[in-house]
Length: 193
Image (cartoon, rainbow, N blue to C red; front, side, top):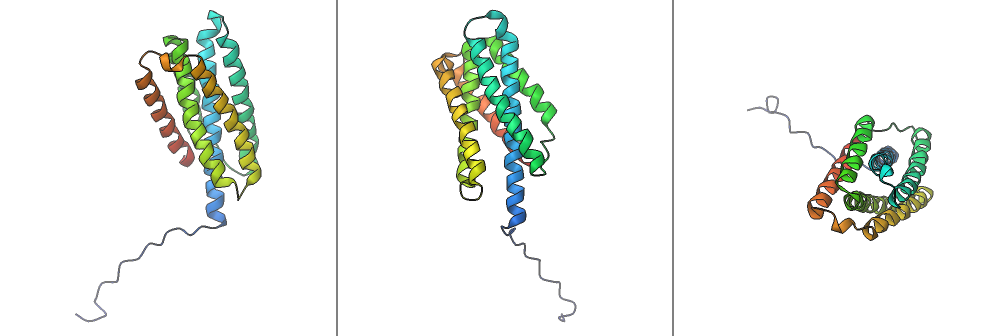
């Protein structure tokens, strides 16, 4: 066989080189997923309050306080998205519905289940923020500092949920594992879409 009829060598694929485009893409993923997470959190608390507000007691006021903090985080991301030319996730309407449904469903089970939901969600979000803070600490220290403040609020929510009896909820291990799995899936989807 002559050289002219030999099949060409397969193309080699080079990994994408880091650079300004890659950094901008990663920042877009971070802002998009964090916006989605804070949106979901607001709606989880709204769902819980829709059920628990009528029952009275201390928990509705605690939930309202947590919702207000999450709403402040959401407002920050609603400013950051357009400032960086980033669109929100395409799943925004679904995350609203899913968050409200998760919040209402856990509240219908009872106060400890509502706390278990908060603990599971905030555990995932705290870890997610911690990773982002470490990633951004050199390249965008101002954003890393802002995320640190949000992370502190999430840790506070988690500790309040544990103190409220999260780990005594009916079927706590299954509830916690299931909610954490849903959160990880939502994160993976929201970063990209």
